[in-house]
Image 1 (spheres, helix red, strand yellow):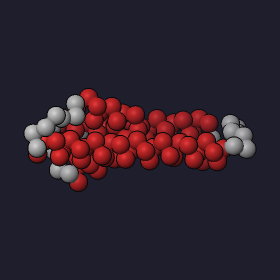
Image 2: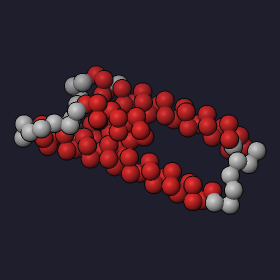
Image 3: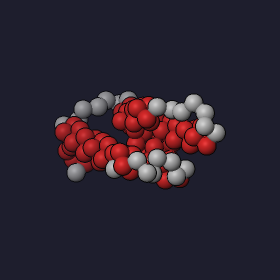
Image 4: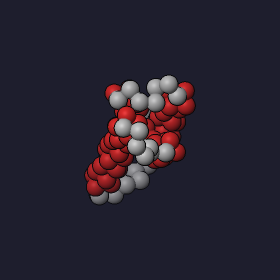
Length: 104
């Protein structure tokens, strides 16, 4: 079943751009929060960090956790971000399988 039209490359471009941007945001939020933690400044709420991961930035946030060595003592970041990423991979794979089963 073909579910796309001639503009599929445009759609894929926008989807790819979105995921690149949201992962960059997740990564930068981790870095910014680490800087603020060192300076004892106003911190980014953990809910915001998780929101960036849930909306597609889980890879960037996860890399940021370990690159900046930030939130590594919090189990909900150490285990939560990989769980979010795994769920996102499952959902995206299921959608791809549903809309384009010839890919599998």
